[in-house]
Length: 188
Image 1: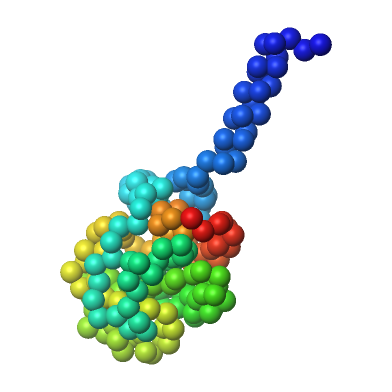
Image 2 (image 1 turned 180 degrees about the vertical axis):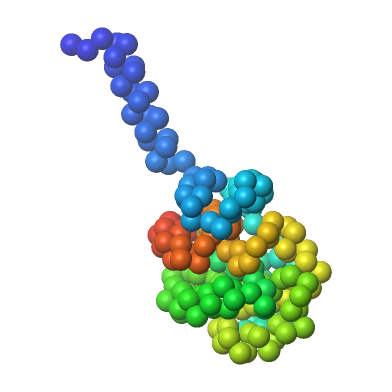
């Protein structure tokens, strides 16, 4: 017959395992190698945002429909903070369009944010030229760039159905993996 000490220890181990499975996801759940954060200060700035509610998007001049905060409730949100002059940003747009088309009915909201001082005047023409199919807007005062700790372009952030940033600084090649995980989580 097991001792009460070993039963107590077994119970604690079982409860710890259950709590780990039930605990909400927190910062650091995705590998740092999935981000473009090649400097410790970039990873630190992004990690400080992960696990917290998404900061506001202070944007203007929406195309493809304005996204209001109330429309984000219960949705998984991908924010692509980009610059019109950035080659990798433009290369990511076709994949963004594919993800938007593929997962929109499952609860995805894709938002493009044109940030950086240079190239703001080309926003509308650039969006048309590159066939952006999802809502996008400008960040002419760079308030969103600052709030979202944008240090490079593109900067992808993925927000869960509860409005919590789960990862920021994500490389485009890993967006779909994160999306699939978060879309599989139940709505609040």
